[in-house]
Image (cartoon, rainbow, N blue to C red; front, side, top):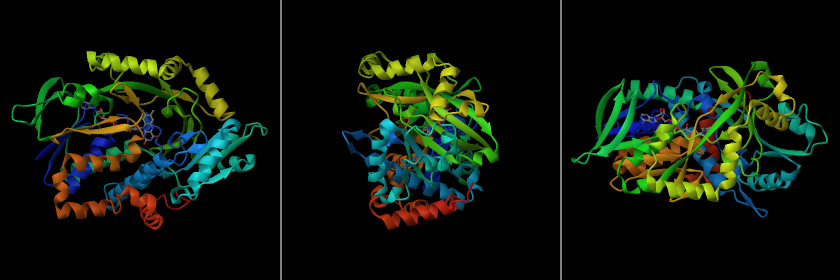
Length: 487
Ligand SMILES: Cc1cc2nc3c(=O)[nH]c(=O)nc-3n(C[C@H](O)[C@H](O)[C@H](O)COP(=O)(O)OP(=O)(O)OC[C@H]3O[C@@H](n4cnc5c(N)ncnc54)[C@H](O)[C@@H]3O)c2cc1C
């Protein structure tokens, strides 16, 4: 059976790796329009590199009239612990030599000002009672918070009332470096083929029932045929779905959200003073993906600070692609859904448009209010981040991701953007189970799966503290993030 995957981002590359590990007899080919793997949204500075496990993101624990909901946070934390098992397996297998090339231990903090202190206190109370977050610490003491995150407090007036939480065992992940190394291993050791510079224009069913993939490679038209097709093309998945003639295609439209970061290179000594990712609270009307945060990042051994993201309205499917590509992915039946979103989410649209025209001066003002004194301390520049394309489904805007699998299990695709790369191994495992259920009926595949994922059951991780700690500690040790002195 041959499987074609469109897109060599973290999703497509993870799916290819898992498929070949579990069923070596499959022929797996990835078609990628760029010239290397992990160069789309997965690339290091196209995203914020937070290993999302709900340690610090307030939007994963919504509060409604003093009642806080932690279900989403528990799910994401459990998913991240499944991701770590997969990445630890890549280390054990020798696919990645040095875990520090992609994952580094980095404190995860949340900081809020006076008006949100009650909310943070409530969050801390609920979350620290669960074994996932038992090591979370909370403080309203200026000096204690300063000892956790000096760059945010050094020049803040002492009379400003703040509260913060910290979890020492968070991570910064270079998803681009991870994807590149995983792709090299998939090609060299597992026999996956990757064709770069191949832009897929259209996919449709041939009369024989196989998928016909029409692409352009170095200006020439080429075709591929596949028994099973997975489209992991980020925002590029929308136009391919639209042209697929699958019955559910008209239920989905893309809602693009662009982004920018402020970025500053810093020395290793300066990084010692701030080994953290600190999340604040999103402005009123702002989408959850624009929660401000100040992050220490590591890329190719060099340290950086990243602040943002500043969301914007940018009607393109992916960074580097034009407006026409987005426009040509629209159909007449998409217009009512788009209008509905524009009306129902008018504050969001207004926010995105106003953010689009924000100059560097306003970006620095935001940085100053988040971390006083920081804008002058380092040499910042604005950089363009990756492009998110959120899902409009049946006229409703959604902030998460969705895996779609056709009823005959020959077409799968991932739409949407969040929480994304952090949970990619769990999401791709579930996708494979739905798309190619036959491979899981074999004993060898089951044994292999158990070796890669000693515990892939979310409920067990959520409800069984001993099992969770055993799994977490084993993965953390292999990834070199178990000990406090790992930097
Ligand atoms: C501003 C921002 C911040 C983020 N921060 C985080 C974070 O902190 N933590 C986190 O976990 N996630 C974060 N994310 C999300 C994360 O980046 C994505 O979830 C992840 O990179 C998606 O991987 P992917 O493989 O689906 O997409 P991509 O990495 O974009 O890969 C898709 C690939 O498909 C290719 N492609 C597209 N169309 C075609 C076509 N027609 N033919 C051939 N190839 C095609 C593209 O070139 C690309 O290489 C962030 C995203 C953004 C935009």
